[in-house]
Amino acid sequence: MMNFDPRSEAERIIDEVFDLVSEEHLIRFIDEPIEEAAASFDLHGSVPVTLEVFNTGTGRFVSHVYKHGLTVQKILSTSQAYAEALQILERGYQSAQGRGYDIALLDALNREHDGLRFVLGQMVQLITAMARAKHVRWVFASFIESAEWAGRTLMAEVLLERWGLFLPPSIMNCAPVQLADHLPELINLLISTDRMVNKMLTGEMKLCAT
Image (cartoon, rainbow, N blue to C red; front, side, top):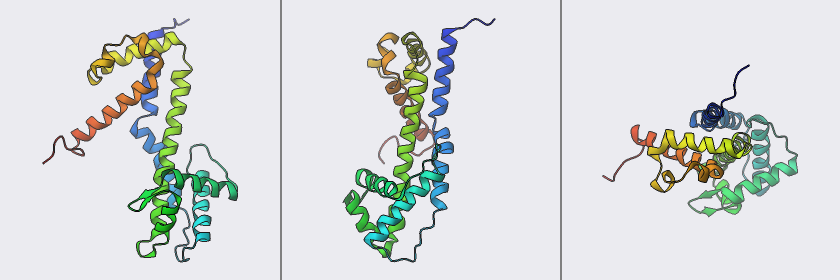
């Protein structure tokens, strides 16, 4: 019979969490399926864009992507798809002209710049961001928040030992017990820092102005 090692279990959970919220995992299991679903959508680009065409088209688009691009398939009725598209645009859409549904409609009416395709392109980004956020919340709820307090304390200890050099002194000066209830925020901070460092190392981000 194997002995249960709480420390090893904490390390295993941390490893799994970082793997599940890594950029590589998000791209493969969230971004790419959504992009493939969006690419397979029949836009009917030859139809002149009107208010009705816009509402119907964005609703059909959301329904198609939710059915074919999400990890957990979501089937929407016509009215649900329209309401979802409206909410996505109102909350997240933005362009040089402003924000929200009305601006998206104005952009879509611009046939010279293939406006409807532009709007749908931004909807892909918004749906992807929502799906990513939902996935990350699920990971934290399943692996971190469901753990007992003692286990979360050990996880905080692991994080401090492994990535202490990347953390500000205000966090490094905290004891693991003080961070046990703030692991999602701490992990998000470490992930953001790691991505920023990678961008610097690959030349995607300039260290200073030139």
